Length: 99
Image (cartoon, rainbow, N blue to C red; front, top):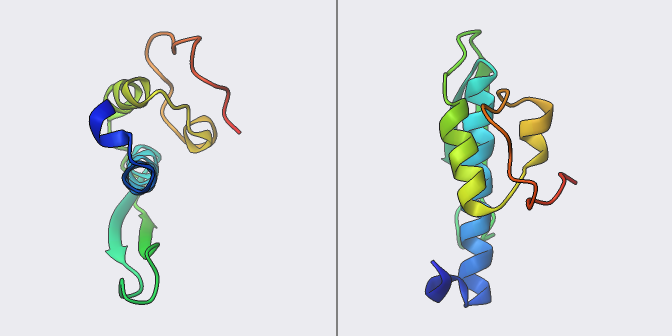
């Protein structure tokens, strides 16, 4: 991914998309049914994603996939610390602490 992420604008947009996808997955692991929707037309704002979450109670078993994704991206999102599934195995000590 390094050749793609060398461009600041692309890196910023991909980071925003990955962040929203991780947020939705963490909410699902906490028992919410989620949808990612276009909130406002792109001509008005580039940040137009709405995450709609409805508490259902049935938790999604996606902890291992989330851990693998965050390890691959080299991130440790705060939402995982607050709501996320318990990570299986040790997180890489090289990852930054959540902020």
